[in-house]
Amino acid sequence: MEMDIYDFDETLFPFDSGSLFAFYCLLHYPWTIVCLPIIAVGFLLMRLRLISFTNFKKTCFMFVPLIPLDKAVKGFWNRHEKQVHKWFFERKRECVVISASPDFLLEEIAKRLPIENLICTRHSRKTGIIIGENCRDEEKVRRFREIFPDARVIDVYSDSIKHDRAIFSLAEGQCYQVVNGELVPFDFKEKYGE
Image (cartoon, rainbow, N blue to C red; front, side, top):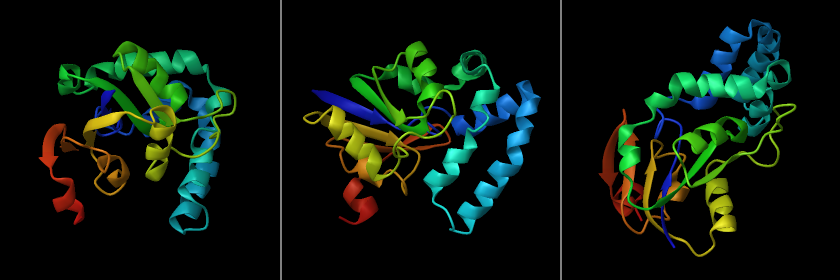
């Protein structure tokens, strides 16, 4: 099977969807502000390297029990669905979107676009807490190969040269860095010196 891999945030979608969703919830469900001090402390501890990014991310969606999650997610995508980059709709092969964003957030947009295959960070829909590992860096490749052990990856699209080296390394065809919504092709060996 031949596939293309896409990152989601700042690749198919011009923003970090998780952060934008948290802001959306703060505006539409203002009582979620009670979680802000804990999230701010978590952010500070992460910046001081006292906790990992994954541990910080466990605090980011602690507001989930305070909102009508399905309604909030649908409202969010009703507002932002049109911002998905148009070039994504011209794809030629089956695709898999691999993202660190929460499954409860991306499953709705995956149905709407449609995205054939979605791999993202699993979260409890009741607590908002991460279940397992955050789906970023090498974890993206591990999860991809767990589901598609024999797939041939043709093209890979991501905004992040730094964090998505692992998925770029799978490309047999072309690597594309997405910069301000534009596709910038590059050679993996030239970019990473291999």
